[in-house]
Image 1 (cartoon, rainbow, N blue to C red):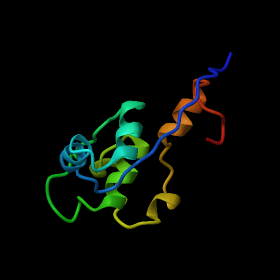
Image 2 (cartoon, rainbow, N blue to C red):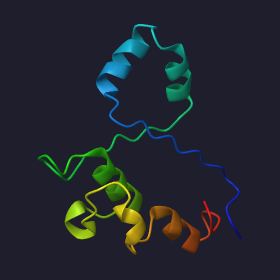
Image 3 (tube, one colour):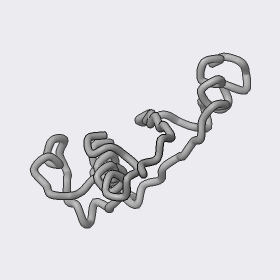
Image 4 (cartoon, rainbow, N blue to C red):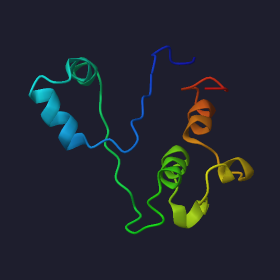
Length: 102
């Protein structure tokens, strides 16, 4: 039986969690406060330590496929569509946690 829990994933690229937290605490971002208070947050950290492998599209692909750049080798935006790596959504669908087309 498939799980009926809902999930909404929101990704904020290049957002500085420390600054956002400070502005929330100062009362400057009330909508972010509501979002934060009603959410579970995960702050990602890159396995890559030097440019150019810190580019956002490399990091997105690493996160969405669950494999590091050293394995996927996707360097340019759009290259991922030519690869055969399974996304995390595909893996969730395999175990009934996400519809086949998330």
